[in-house]
Amino acid sequence: MATKTLYTHSNRQFYRDSEITGTVDFIFGDAAVVFQNCKLVVRKPMDKQSNMVTAQGRIDPNQNTGTSIQSCNIIASSDLEPVKGSFKSYLGRPWKEYSRTVVMQSHIGDHIDPSGWSVWNGDFALKTLYYGEYVNKGPGAGTSKRVKWPGYHVITSAEEAKKFTVAGLIQGGSWLKPTGVKFTEGL
Image (cartoon, rainbow, N blue to C red; front, side):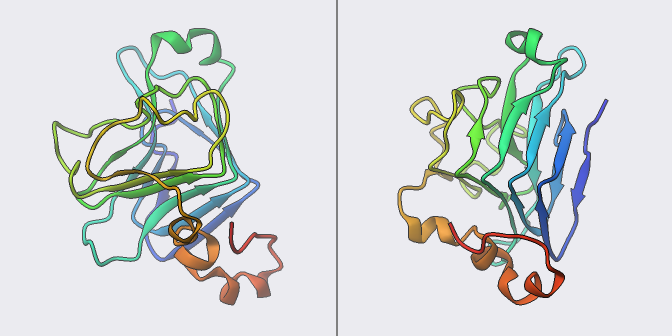
C-alpha cells in the first residue's frame, strides 16, 4: 500500500515528467513544490479508506510554501478503476493549519469526488487553508459541486494563478535553467 509516497519536506522542489502513485496523502510536506507534466496515479486503498492525493503542511501564513500541480494528469490506477465507485478519492486535505495547494491546467479523472477536497478532522483549517483550481479539464474537473469552504478558490485570474507557477512559487528561472531540466516558467 503506497501511503505517503513522496515527502516534500522543505526548500524549493520541482518534479517534471514523473509518475507518482499512492493512496493516502501520497504527496505530503511543506516545501514550495511544483509538479509539472506529471502523472499522479491514485491506487485502490485499503477497505474503509479514502484516497488523498495531497496533504500540504504549511504552519505559518507568511511561509512561501505550497504544492502546485500544473499540467499534470490525475488518474485512477488499473486496480482502482474497476472499483472507483466504492472508494472516495480527493485532491487533498489540510495536514496543517495554513495548508496551500493549487491544481491548475491539469486533467482530473472521474475518480475524484465532485467535492474535490476532504477535511482532515472536523472543521480544522477550513478557514485558514488556501486551495485553488485553475483551468483544469477532464471529467473530474467541474467545480460546481466543490467544497464551499472559505479557503477554497476557483481561480479565474491569470495573475492569481501565476503565483503558483515555477516562476511565482519556486523562482525556478534562476536555479532550474543551469540544470538543463525542461520546465515551463509561467502558465
